[in-house]
Length: 187
Image 1 (tube, rainbow, N blue to C red):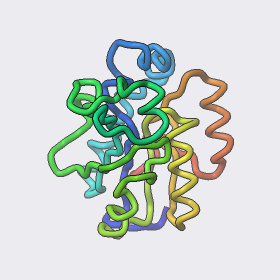
Image 2: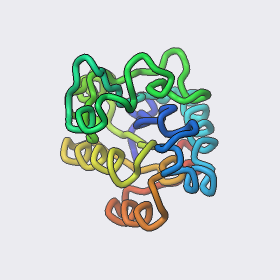
Image 3: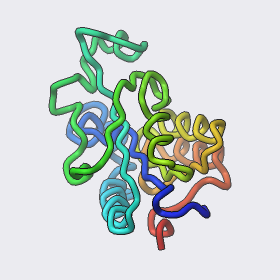
Image 4: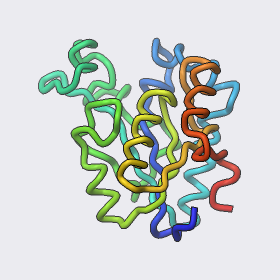
C-alpha cells in the first residue's frame, strides 16, 4: 500500500438503491448491511478519502431496457438497475460532485464493457480500495481483474456485503492478503 494519495482510489461497486432500499435485492443483503454497519462504513470511508485527496470512483450497474447487454439484463427483462429509475441511482450520502462514474458496465466484473480501465490509467491510479455489493460476485471478480492488470487492489471488507456470512468469509479468504478494514485505510 505504498502509492501516494494521488495514485490511490476508492472504487464502489453497485452502491445503488437497488441494494440499499426496500425490495428483494435489499432483503438479500439486509442482515449483512445492518449487522456489519456497511453503509455507514462506506460513508465514513469516502468522507475520509475525499479529505485526503483520494479519488472516489463509482461503478454502478445500469440496465437500459431498450439496449440490453449482458445476461443479467435479459434474465431480468431489464427490470433491475433500470436506467432512469431511482433503483439505478447511487445511494444517498455516498456520491458527491467531483466523484467519477464508470460508464458502460454491464457485467459482474466492473471492467467488462466499461471505461474503468481508461479511468484508472488517465488518473494514474496504482492502488484501489474496493467496496460494494456483492462481495463474492461483482466485488471479488473486479478485484481479481485488477490484480491481473498489475494494480494493488484491496477488499475493504466492512464496506461490502453479500447474502450471508459464509459467502462473505469465503470471499475474504479467497482474497487473503488483500483484505483491509475501513478504519485502517488512510490513517
